[in-house]
Amino acid sequence: MLDTCVIYPTVMREVLLGVAKTGAFEPLWSERILEEWARAARKIGPTGEAQARGEIALVRAAWPRAEVTWKPSLEARLYLPDAADIHVLAAAIAGSADAIVTLNAKDFPRHTLAEEGLERVDPDTLLRGIWERSPQEVAAVAEAVRQEAERLSGEAWEMRRLLKKARLPRLAKALTT
Image (cartoon, rainbow, N blue to C red):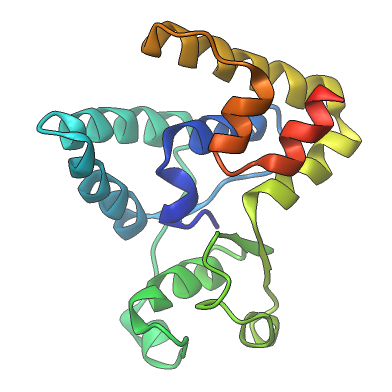
């Protein structure tokens, strides 16, 4: 289950979904997670939300079975330190996920997730582990993301700098050593 905080920002999302396209893992999300992405994109300016909604349509088309739904009664029985994150846990349970991929460790306690048969993993750890099994595939995805970042920004991006900025330092080190 991909939490909103790993879907938005762009570079992290593009690396995660690029690696998912290789078959390394099956991404899951909910309508609410995608809606949070769209609302968060407002921060980048007046066109941010519209751009995000276009990207969301593409993501939905690429993974038509990734969007999870559940009955409200599921959320009612769950607890997390931040009640605003319970929907993520409910989606993970409903989608039979193995893990929640998030940067938000404090609001997804490992013991609480373990009670539901879930793990918490940060995106850097997930991607580094996949790189250890399939280095060429992950490197190719990262290179494609780097090239697209250069195209969109009009500036040169060194791989390590781009991935570190995207909060993927372990993957950056693995790809550049």
